[in-house]
Image 1 (cartoon, one colour):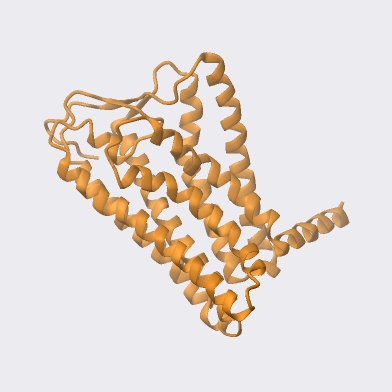
Image 2: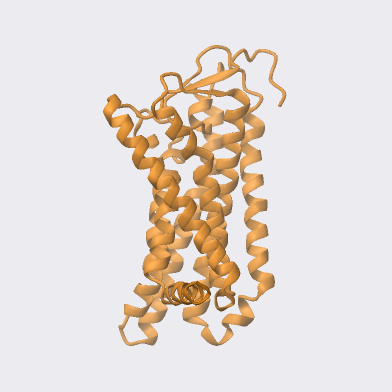
Amino acid sequence: MDRPNDSVVSEFVLLGLSGSYEMKVFLTLVFSLIYLGIILGNLFILLLVIFDYHLHSPMYFLLANLSFIDVGVASTTVPKMITDLLNEYKIISFQGCMVQICFIHIMGGVEMVLLIAMAFDRYTAICKPLYYLNIMNSKICVSFVITGWVIGVIHAMSQFAFIINLPFCGPNKVDSFYCDFPRIIKLACTDGVKFEFIVAANSGFMSMGTFFLLILSYIFILVTVWKRSSGDLSKAFVTLSAHITVVVLFFTPCMFLYVWPFPRSSIDKYLFIADFALTPVLNPIIYTLRNKEIKVAIKRLIKRHVKFC
């Protein structure tokens, strides 16, 4: 990875999460358990969808891809956050920082598209049930996933192309537990106003646009169900509550950081714990506990295991 001639910074110091030594030990234990839950929970859903043919439907295909992305997002940041909690010097190389930024934004872009696809899937299932399998065919589902990866790469690289050429000639302390565009831009030895605009126009617009599109789609679904069922929204609420919970948890930190991309406080790094740790560990719980078909698939798996034992 080439560096500009006037960049002398070869590594960044991550200030991480503050607190006493006892608190850091406690957080190390908590986040280690959370990360273990992320890996086990999401891989369980991924493998369950792959090996249980009853779950070979559009909704679960998209859910399996979401689980895969959640593992990737968490693995990009959480392991280093855990190891850094008890380290006095929290160092990340320039190249490592750039790679982390790229992976965060690529997978973030994929997740946004997947959430849109899942909202469209629920709209089709609730509002056009007779045409559901015709609309949400395998070709469309695969197209959603491919589109997500293409948009994720374009989204990340369009900002990375500007950041990699910035001169870094002195300050190298990042007030966070991970690298990201807004905080790295602040360290560059140049005027960051135009780069602030680029981040806001790219990540900020993408986050806010996707969030409001999803909220509008859920409102449209609820209104449609309300008109068709004479005011009974209970079924739609049960179906959509899990999706709405995930959307709010995922997009709140994104909009907080990227719409106003030059943070004046450290609160954003605590908010992003929701994106990197809480949302990935809650997704398997939300979609499992509130999903009858997943519960039935788990029971089938248990019975099959007991039979072979």
